Amino acid sequence: MKTLYLVRHAKSSWNNANMSDHARPLNDRGERDAPLMGERLKARKPQPTIIISSSAVRAETTATILAEAIDYPLSDLKIDERLYGAELNDVISIIGKLNDAIECGMLVGHNPTFTDVINALSGSQMKEVPTCSMAVLRFPTNTWSKIGQVQAELLDFDYPKKDKA
Image (tube, rainbow, N blue to C red; front, side, top):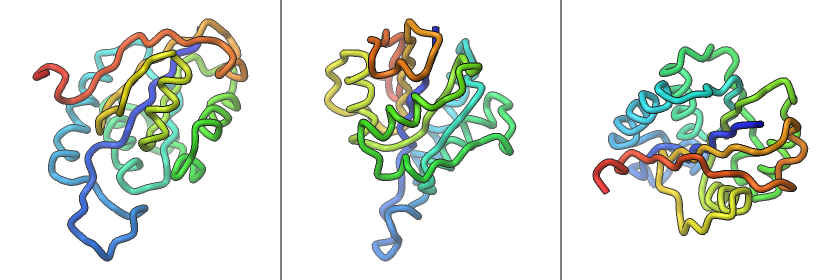
């Protein structure tokens, strides 16, 4: 079995109209939500042994906060520029190339693509995953290259306001 966490970056700032989309940082809510989700991640099993983030500042910051929460070495955090602006098949390709020795991985990226990926891989029908949400998918395979060919089980879907909903 393979386990995959798909995390949409925390809420980002739109305060600077002159800033590129790629450079947008987290806003105050994002700075609060990411550590909250890090604490929730810390309580989960299995823990990811690889974390791959989009190169966008908001995604990389979210990934760093989550990594710190689970004592994941920041030097091992992978930044993959393909996740910024990726489409469904791009993300599935990235997942499919993971080393099979990895049992549990995490990708941190963007909408609308992550909603599409979660729905495609698990058969869910989510309309839009909220910022800093975390989908936990389990695949009945020992080979990452089978992702996209085998149906995942959506083990959990968590987001900052879940307990308030």
